[in-house]
Image (cartoon, one colour):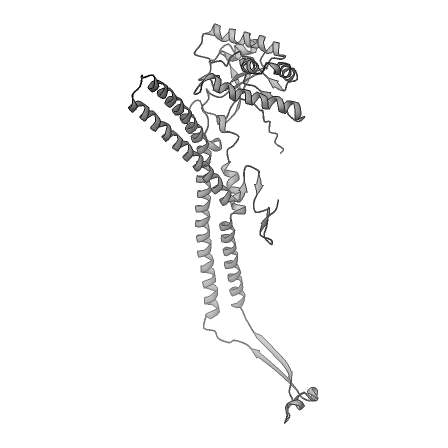
Length: 408
């Protein structure tokens, strides 16, 4: 069965959060610059869903007003999709009236840019309101995409239990009045595209891992020994024959005179009559050794498979730890800068400044440690499976054993 995977380039944009608005906007400018460059120069570029809020384009054009024509052209051609919201909607912190007005203004702004996005977008809303399909369908939306409200499942689509947990990323979202829209859940949220499936890692480990291959070879050698001793335990006779030439002379030179004058032929037959159970004993020893090798190989195989499973699980979890550590670091840097400014104007003492600095340094160490563990786990998986999951390259298939060099 052929599987088709759709990859939609998109963003989740906070105008102001753990950094100031202007610092966030500098990242936005870099993002939109890259989108416009790719839309103009890459004919295979399918488009970018710019966060479901038109204010992102307003913020960009305040700094790059000369890009307006190019932005509007990309929106008209579908290279950039924007709206339907004016600013990213939180479904509970504002009133119902503010929600509807936000939607109306966003759709008007998107129309001015050239086209209105047809997806209700909630990448990071802290819970979802039941009436959203009802409101969005009346506004002409075709689907809803959201990242919260349904509990993210574990790595490898593992369900740990709970009323609001699902392995499915597609569903029909129904409002209390019965209005329905297709709902797309960000399964595993931000990290769903970089996970390593355990089953795939085990499959590559079983086929590529040198230790597992050595264990298979040991079993084959033990089976060969059993087969050999089994055949030797049956009736066994050996026949030896030799032929040679003989010459006798008084001096060395005459030895090779007429070498065919005399010849010698010898034939011997050896038939063992009684071996006192030696051959049978060898056969039994070979069978017992085969059982020992199989048990030992299976134990080692289980240990290696457990190591693969644990390493892959740690790797998948580590991605979330990196995101948390990075967020904590940004907040610690922001807190230190605020404390330093307050210290300069005399609103904070040296102890508060020192404590804030220590927290920032601790957050930096935690972030670096999370990155280190992430890459250590990744390259450990490569070593256990001889497979690069980033490039989908089997390392064992690409290695030239004769020359001892990597094939490019």
